[in-house]
Image (cartoon, rainbow, N blue to C red; front, side, top):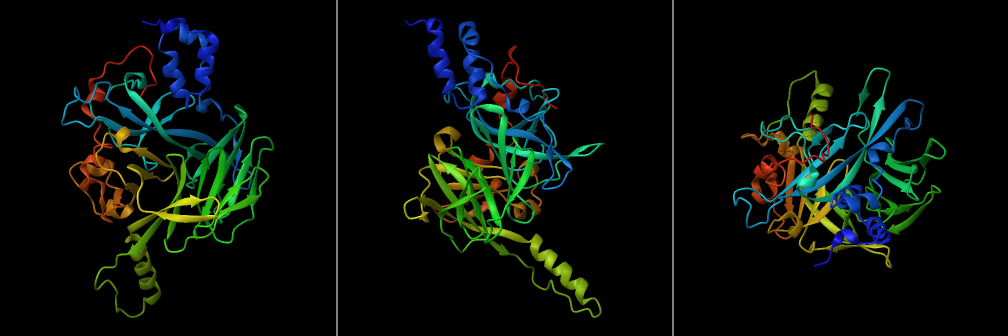
Length: 404
């Protein structure tokens, strides 16, 4: 039997350079002391962003942090796992750059879990589980002399240049609907003027920045602030998302509907303006998703072509990031679905402890059915509560971080 500890250092270095994330490198180095000494410990993203960034585009301050979405798998085989417990769990983790403490967040929103089970392990050691990084998001924190707040809510994507952690570029959507880019080399924001329509989403895909506006018009954003058209508009839906899935760039078109209650209008005299305001507000609050369409990019034709099948994959549409996973990785038997944030289902006031995920909906692309996450047990179990094997796993000495 081969002795893996005797692999040449040069080969180990080459292998480590092909690993997808710094967590993969950590797991690679944990195999044995020989591998650990052969491969340099990774620079974690939390150490990259010490500089403060000016507010778009004025002089107030922002700091930047990274959050990672992981799929944790049971350390035991599927035959050993309790049949009543899911074998996978999706979580989002944010590490405090000052003390290394870990925050667990809702995978699709920016909210933190209200509470964790009493038997939840502290610390949580990622080396105890099978780990797949599904996605990442970046958050701009607004800084004042007294506090730090997450007041900037638009999606943020980042690219590091030439593996230099101090040389990076940020792309986001300005409050005007235009694109805004920050270069660490010049330490200031630039507003990109290309905007026939306000932009809906941005993504870093295969090393390039992509942006889509609310008509579906899609561009590649160059580091010189220039944009190149890659796809013509797709009219019909109300909000567009870009998702990378199985080596392809997808466009997801979300359709909204207004749910108004019968007899909600009032005939009282003298308060017409106020009544109209609150009626419009009520309509906005009752806005809900009714369907989605998915498109694949036809590079040659510069157009989006509708796709009826996701090749047994599941798409996730979050507040700060989008990602996809195979049904095999998720350990579910049903694919071709979209899981998304939906405040309509949240407003229904789900009970029975579902508050941790009741703002999430599921759309079945094949059947066209749509509903709250709790109506799809195989998917709801991916989110909450934590599976029993999380608390039954024994933590080892190499710890990922202390939980808050």
